[in-house]
Length: 221
Image (cartoon, rainbow, N blue to C red; front, side, top):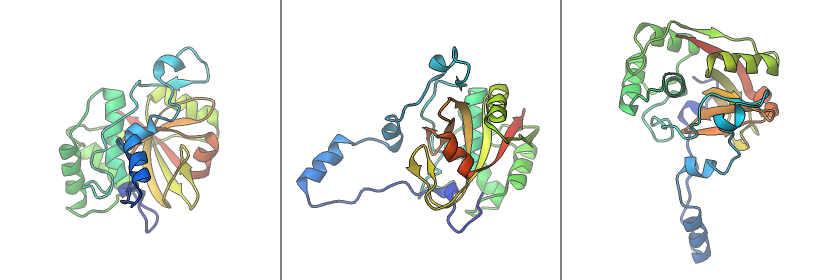
């Protein structure tokens, strides 16, 4: 899924370069860990702490997710397929293997490392399934205001969202490269929606969301 030369469906994660300074090496050792572990420092609200609160909802306790090789230089060049897998984890409590998801991506694209549009992706998921799981359809959900987004998340537990990032846009405070991207929303708080992508959960501000969100889709099971 891409609307620009730079496609976030195949995002390159930050790479640390070797430095001469011993002090810097020590700092790197202190922050050693995976990208998703670093994201744990964000304030992520879990389902247990959201449930009693009227304006806070989370459909899963899970924070980290498989990346499905959808980060550079991985083999999955389409975030829609990774989002479908994340949706299945949240809603179906089933975790497909990266190999299965990648195999279906290659079948859908004829072996090309390209992004798909939402219509072609939806048709493939309906007719052939992704990692052995088929759906009945994708339905676009109105999102003219927060209330509609929150209501849809409560009803469906997880929604596919398409973004278009421009220079300076962020996801939970993390800079996003310009381009199209798909992810999953599985909750919200007064601050903003919880977005699952790139193997972790980001807590976006509503201002970030409205700046870059373009469409919201409910999965018809």
